[in-house]
Image 1 (spheres, rainbow, N blue to C red):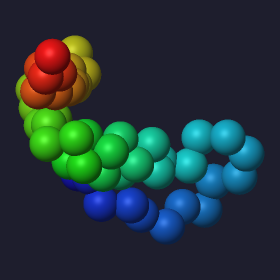
Image 2: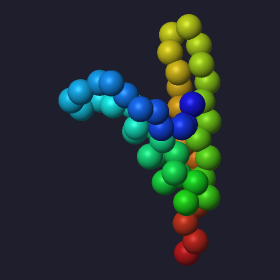
Image 3: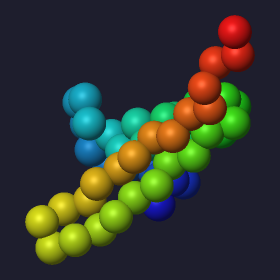
Image 4: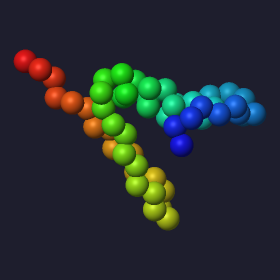
Length: 52
């Protein structure tokens, strides 16, 4: 789901956004969870709390 794919689309929405977000979240030691349902997909981004 998070792998970038080649797209034949032109213009804005080319399907790379989720892959980019996944890499950024990994670099911050976070997680992405997803839940698929007939209504669509819900994504949750979990990031560790900042140290003070």
